[in-house]
Length: 606
Ligand code: AMP
Image (cartoon, rainbow, N blue to C red; front, side, top):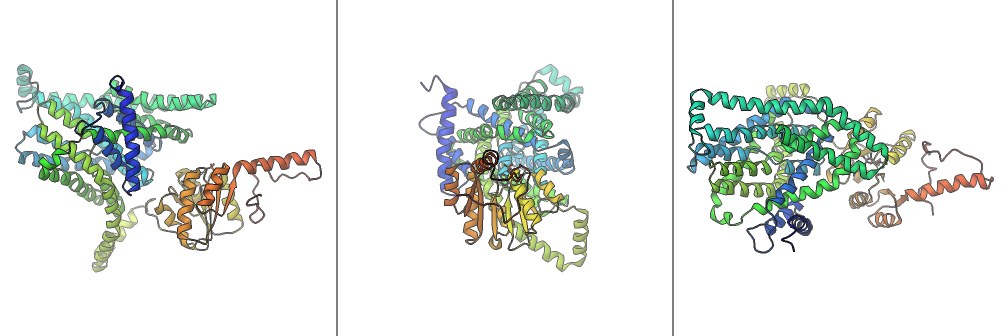
């Protein structure tokens, strides 16, 4: 039966095993992606037992790439993209050149032909979209300056890949490697007069097509796509809206790839970007989230499937050299390039950590290289092994960068102290450099209230705290709301409050109270649990939408839990009572926008 339904069995096999091994990895305090990769190795052809369909898995993974890039596009405006071009374009080009050079040197050392060595180097130079975006998203970095630089860098790499995929077959057929499908007459002619012309024309054609696509998106897509989404939103059908989001993300990406030769990822990014300025972008991001996560998992499974563990025994030294280039060589290059642009150390470290891995693009290049007879099969195997190992090492790289940051900063300060001229320089550089949104320092408040979420609920709580003069700060993960808070002079931190780093900024240990005003009880429980462990005496007030959530939140340490639906019901009862039993005088206090003064607000009604 499974033989008749390869698509179903690949999806089911991939997701079920990824779930099982992801959960085990989580249990062992490892990143879940290690579990997903192991699931892939198990359903791959190199281990006994069930083998998933090897051509379907990477295709399914592409859907994950599309949805991820679409999601990133939703947070990006054209202005954001252009604001990082100054560093992303030269940075990505310099890094690609450096990594390609290292890869080429390794290839030359192995005695591979020049073309093959270059393809090998190029494959080691491009980072995986999925790995990079997942890493940034997990750390809530996408909307910070360093996140934007990393995404801009990725887009330049993506464009370079679009060019490389066009140029490599062309170069193989007219280049002098003697491999590839060489047609004698055209090769001779090309050598005589057309080598540069042929390649030049191809580059020009590719660039024109990309430019045409971008122009179409910015001129027509920018009007048409938000207009369509608004129309659908007005139908009130959630199902249609969800479908619309998927249709636009997948449709534009696929159309871009087929008609304009742009990569699927780039197409999806632009589809998201033209929707970014619409207020519907937030909803669109939410609607595509579950599917995006599921397919991104299949990406890791499909990478795992390609891995042949035997290579670890056959070629240990070569693998080490490959990993060295990917993880160390590329990272150091990116680190130095970012520093050369006078960006802070933290930015340089994040960018180099996020780029210190390879993935889907490298597989495509490797496959093309082997197909054209440029790259020996050994090269492809090294790329595959290098990818899987660098992906596993990536979270570790982030961890190391976090650890190295204080050390490096300390060294820099000492250096500056020892050399007054350098200190003056550093001071001047600091002045030129705007303070970054990601260079945040913990609050100076103590004995304060911490408010999490500034939406419909948090806003009312916050306004009350403000008018009663209570010292407080807000944690919010939407940058728009953060902007609003800062404009009102309220101290606010951007980030997911579930993340320990974000909570640490709020100085939990000395805070008096914590109000968790977010709708997701699962997240609220994680926040309450952490807060309780740091500060046993803090008052925790949380928000819930069902009795089960109330119980759960209390179990995780919340002192008082307000069940939204119950409060709404009580408000309605109150209002009805005023009409039916006229004993209660009419009052406006349950009008939606009324601010209830602190101290008199009922915390929990029994
Ligand atoms: P509302 O449901 O209208 O009260 O809005 C909830 C608010 O909480 C929104 O502004 C969200 O951006 C914010 N929010 C939701 N989850 C989190 C979280 N885990 N960390 C920080 N802010 C959050």
